Image (cartoon, rainbow, N blue to C red; front, side, top):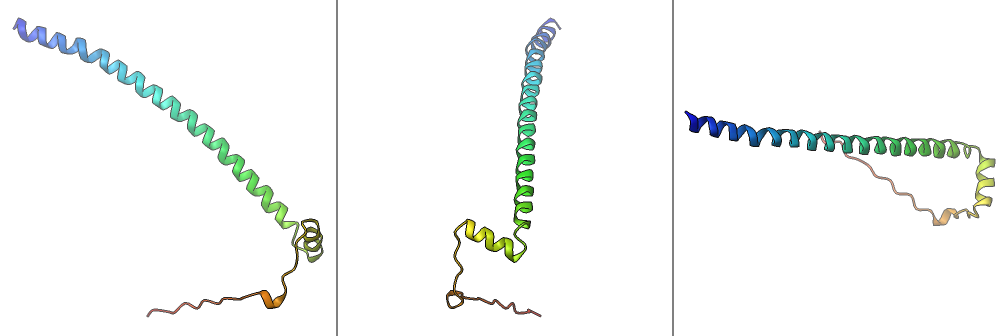
Length: 95
């Protein structure tokens, strides 16, 4: 009886501190992942806002006059029609 009590006491003496160490380790992992998620959310918000600004900036080039002004400003040249190749792809209906 004393032998089993000693083994059981030794078991609890060893496992309880290990349990608390595992809880602390898991809490540390959770906090570091929480910080990483918060940073990723900030980055995502910045990307979304930048994308919105780009879309809004592109919307200003909808009229022909604005396109010509922007083309002159960016020193773009018009491609002659003989240098344009059009490719048409037709999809067959598999029935």
